[in-house]
Image (tube, rainbow, N blue to C red; front, side, top):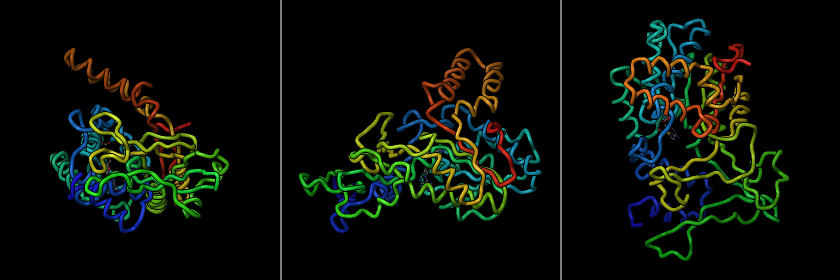
Length: 369
Ligand code: SAH
């Protein structure tokens, strides 16, 4: 690792300021303006590091587009609606959603597309994907999107937001930090985990339900995710609308465990080894997102599994329809994609969907009891 890499920049910062929280390390690894993972490359697809649901099949974005059209009708069909996506990647989900939304022309005409994306590389990619369909407006943060009734979609966005890790020791809870490995030469820095000495301010982040976890347990919290969920909830409560959050993670409340993972070229990699060159994610704690959105004033429904959501939204019927006009090879691809999206061996049960809505909206499509 030479100068001019993220590792060198992080090593210089640690040498100056001391060890970083896992959250600060993760934020730099993904979002450093020059060397951050999402800032410098397009990581998606077969040739990239990982494949997300919208990249598996057009059916995913199409059903989400129809979910939005249905939500718009339930809102009484406002003449303008902000269709907001958080972390749109290549723009594939939005493109498929907009194409599907064409079945309801008044909805399609009401849509104003807003993309919350920090990566210039991916913004350019999104602009290219969406050029035939929409003229989106980009924002760095959800807070920057102008007020108004909104439908908000976030797929694999929250898993990329920084988490902090607090570990139970014999002396109480201590924050896990990332420090320089003293055995590595200065010109080739390596990183290692250490525990914060003294009374960690981070100990106050441990939820009451986990305070008595056994020594050695690691608890993950994501103040960054909670903050975004709070803004989402407040926005829906003040201006109306609904949100759909899909990600992988814990369904029934926070649990102990170290879920920080690095993925590079479709394989797991050591989490501290290649900052900026591997994707870093962690399990999403849906209960905590729902609680933060409720504190913001919204109602929360679910989470349900991705398989349940897509099945209730009609993915089996959609696959049948696509297969009717497909060649045999394409038909087999559609079946494989379907299995990957809803099957237990794929994303069907690991991934979950949480819906948020303005008070009085009622459960959105797919979330009816
Ligand atoms: N939703 C897409 C991409 C998921 S990857 C898909 O399903 O394929 C995460 C996305 O969130 C990327 O577009 C990344 O650049 C963006 N992102 C990560 N952290 C962000 C942040 N703090 N603010 C805005 N966008 C962020």
